[in-house]
Amino acid sequence: MPGGIRCRWLNRMRTQVAIIGAGPAGLLLAHLLHRDGVDAVVVETRSQDYVAARVRAGILESSSVELLESVGLGGRLRAEGHEHRGIYLQLPGERHHLDFVDLAGHGVWVYGQTEVQKDLVAAGTAQVHYEVRDVALHEVTTDRPFVTFVDSTGAARRLDADVIAGCDGSFGPSRGAAVPTDQFERRYPYSWLGILAEVAPSTDELIYAWHPDGFALHSMRSETVSRLYLQVPNGTEPADWSDDRIWDELATRLGHGVDGWQLTPGPITDKSVLPMRSHVRTPMRHGRLFLAGDAAHIVPPTGAKGLNLAIADVALLSRALVSAVLENDPRRADSYSDDALRRVWRCTHFSWWMTTMLHATGDPFDAQLQLSQLRWVTTSPAGATGLAENYAGLPIGF
Ligand code: APR
Ligand code: PHB
Image (cartoon, rainbow, N blue to C red):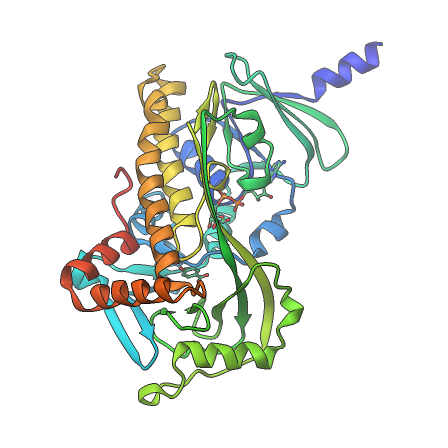
């Protein structure tokens, strides 16, 4: 039918890089490619407002900050973000400060993923189709891969590309289209109950607390918004915890009253439970499909590596795709997976190490090992430097 054929052609588009997912990995990749003259189109199932408002990570390594700054995304970050020299480690009755600047040469920045996302949207460099559905990847092992989807008006679309970048997180279709050679997974027998509260942080830098009742973390988003977490059993529902119970438990675990320190409670505006797992799929490439960010790996949040890994992945991937697409040089694309996985495994180890050092398991032997490890980290310069170097971050090309 002629109408059908015309419609099919009208709905067909071509780009150099088709990007699935407009989270930080997808939008930053589009931004980096745009700066280097590579055309990209992003498809995203959610709305722009939903993606920008999701409560997510909040700590940037200095290498992430330098990268964002080098591509014109550092203005608001430097003005409104907060540089922290280090973190506090809390044990019952004692608090220790680790100064990353002294120990490893640089600190970290408190700047929410939502803010990074807003800066990327404001840059206006990514061409994004929001609120699409039925996204499917095709022919990824040929030199003519394409993506099909239904756009927000209900029209069926086809996007032809030289390569596809799967930046669609842990539940998107790219993972299914990229057949892994190996998958590695660790599930943890606990979760985090996370809250956002309209109250000034009770601390100048993050507090990571070991406590026999379970781990707690005091983080923050701004001078007026605090972000805090409690270790809870898997299967916990947010409604199981009243606001008063949350604040009481946070006060106990974070050391309220020790040396006069006080935790100030405030109105809770968001309450959610986060499962914890480590997952790596290798390689991070299947034919002309390249995976980046949560689509390729998940880390538990202890140590704040998820967002930084996504940023490091796309920094490598954009260089690889620029060489492949503009200069017809496949070498960086060929080594992308191995290059990215070096850092992925370092961060996977660090996140696992921080997680297992700080969370209560109910086993007294585990507790003694954790306390011994924490004493080493808080008293030995070698132990402290190892934590500082990994937390504050390694260079992008590590
Ligand atoms: N089609 C298009 N987009 C999709 C699809 C799909 N079928 N499925 C999921 N997406 C989108 C999601 O809606 C989301 O916006 O892909 C995006 C993936 O974004 P993130 O989950 O934020 O993942 P990533 O960009 O890799 O960033 C990693 O996010 O989960 C945190 O801790 C993690 O901070 C880290 C960061
Ligand atoms: C956060 O602010 O959300 C956060 C900070 C540090 C972590 C995890 C989460 O280790």
